[in-house]
Picture (cartoon, rainbow, N blue to C red):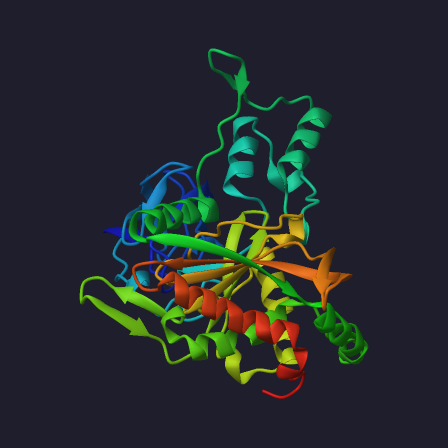
Amino acid sequence: MLREFKFPDVGEGIAEGEIVRWLVKEGDSVKEDQDLVEVETDKALLTLNSPYTGKVTKLHGKEGDIIKVGNVLTTFDAGDEEPPVEAEKRDAGTVVGSLSDNPAVEIAHPVQATPAVRLLAKQIRLDLATVKGTGPGGRITKEDVDRAAMQTGQQTHVEADAHGLIEKIPLRGIRRTVAKRMAEASKRVAEVTIWEDADITELERVRARERRVAEEKGVRLTYLPFIIKAVIPALNAHPYFNASLDEGAEAIVLKKYFNIGIAVDTPDGLIVFVIKDADKKNILDLAKETAALADKARLRKIDLHELKGSTFTITNYGVVGASYGTPIINYPEVAILGLGKIEDRPVVRNGEIAIRKMMPLSLAFDHRVIDGVEAGRFLGVVIQHLEDPNLIPIEGK
């Protein structure tokens, strides 16, 4: 009896994936729970297993194809076997958690590499299992593939246009998701950006003093927890920044909870993880949680629920030396705060020139919901708390 296996719903928000590698071919006999195919989503690398024992009669799609949830992946001749509960109707858990309730899907990381690197290896017929990764968490980079190709005498595939050699990188995984979201935001949001500087000289003294205490507790104390705590009172004072616009209902939705999104750079692209109920956590709590979630995001081991539900986002491009920017709003939110490079500058204080530690801030907001005057006042509250660290308790809420 012919049976179909469809790409299951592996968690809220995952709508599609890319076929990275087939682990069987047409005509193969397989057993239930045998590995069938590796699929890369914008959240994780999945290995999908066979829900049947039988023969593979057809593979629906080739490596590199994008598949939607519910699309047929494989057709089996399962003999007289009764069909099991369809995998897509089972509880799939999270994209990186235990999926023991769904035997047709399990997370595996046999090879850590982006789809672009996998495609490059496929083009030169290089087995990635033989390549040692030098990227974060052992991830295989393009440089690792190039090095292995030189050692084995293989060459990477290149093309040429009218002017010279080119290389085409497929838009896949996180980068594809980011591209779609940025395009959506640019079409739907009337975005405006204002810039200001915060004098964090006193905050640096507090951080330096408390850093030793934090280290004794195994916590690395950066500026980010202080910035999160400075944003909370600004969101309280100006609730339209902690909101979204329901265009269908023609209503502004004010959120009564404070979930702060933090944008982090990863080898695969930008990921925004979420600090839930940030207003209920102290500086040390926030320091521990942001560090843990940033590591999980970079290693692609983050749970889906840790990427959902943000109400306001912070992005730090200062870590790469940039001072000011026009960050794109994390739609459907209505504002985002960009952090620039901290540096010592000469400024006038009480009629005299003094060297102070300054932090550039860039606040982008949706002008459909927020006026410029309110944006200036919001940023003023943030700066007030950054410049007076006594307003930010270290261990209190």
